Each structure stands twice: as structure tokens, then as C-alpha cells.
Image 1: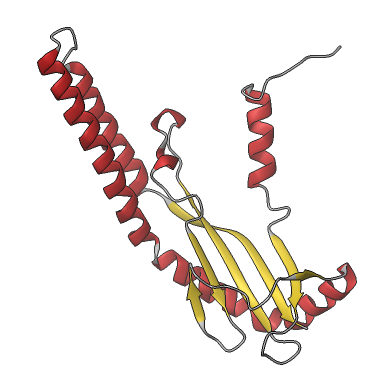
Image 2 (image 1 turned 90 degrees about the vertical axis):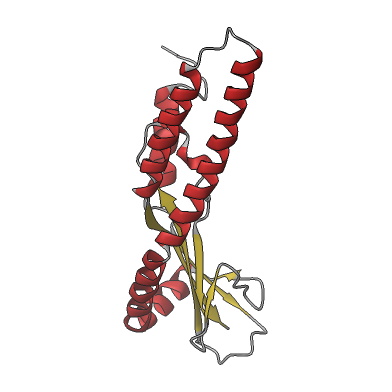
Length: 191
């Protein structure tokens, strides 16, 4: 038997969610040339995403940034937040070479990654504050528009504005419970 499913079907939606949120493919290794550092040094890049467990109907993701935070530690120990750029384009490494380099640097890199994770978690409050302000502004405009429409058109029930206020409170409550989750790690070696 064959069954045709659309993209909106719950099976497809859940399968895509399982693939994209799984741990596979969340780590990468590469190298760059023309970098100004000694061979074997490495850049550490971490990408964080904001995760919020709220009902889908609230659409909380509209107010949270899609890529919540990007941290990069240079070989010199400089930390770059949301604006770090590698000095060159990362090139792929052969699997065996990459595995050997990662095993060699694991003892040095793991404490740095844990430190960067803690630093990222400390930035969560700023992100939540910005998302709350963005949601508050959007809902304030929506509620004001509903009040203006209700004044002009008596067939618009005042209950709509009350529903929008309740939805605003639910969205702000959900945003306040957001978490910053490490999404991916990339090690870029200097070649």
C-alpha cells in the first residue's frame, strides 16, 4: 500500500523535527590556511539556539531569535560574541585526520567549551528581555488596533481585545521560561 502525505501531516512534521533536533550532524571539523597562527592551533565555534516549550498556537518563535547566540574563541584566547569571522574559508579534513586532531586536542578544548556554555547561559536573560519587549510591542499594537476597530465598528466584540491580552500574557510567560541550548560545535584548525 502507498499513502501520500503532505508536508503538514503530523507524521512528516514529527519526522522532520526528530531529524533536525537530534544530535547527529551537530559537530564539524575543518581547517583554514593563511591565518596568522601556528599550525595546530584551533578556533572553537559554538552556536546556541533558544528553546521554548510552549503551545504551537502561541507562535513564540516569532519573538525569539532563530540563532540565539554565536560564540567563537580564537587560538589567542579572544572571545567573539555574535560577530566572529574566521580569517579564511574552512576547508574539509579527511575523516581520519579530523578524528586524530580532535582526540589530540580534546583535553584542551573540553574545558573551553564548558566555559563558553556557561558564558552563553549567562546571556540568556538579555535575550529573554529583548524577546519580551518585542512581544509586548507587537501585542500592544494589536490590542490598540482592536480597540480602534471596536470604536468604529460595533459588531467587533470587546472580548477580542481581552483574548489578545490573555495571549500576550501567555506568550510573555512562555518566553520567560526559554532556555539556551547548545546546537552545534565546530573546531577549525590552523593548517
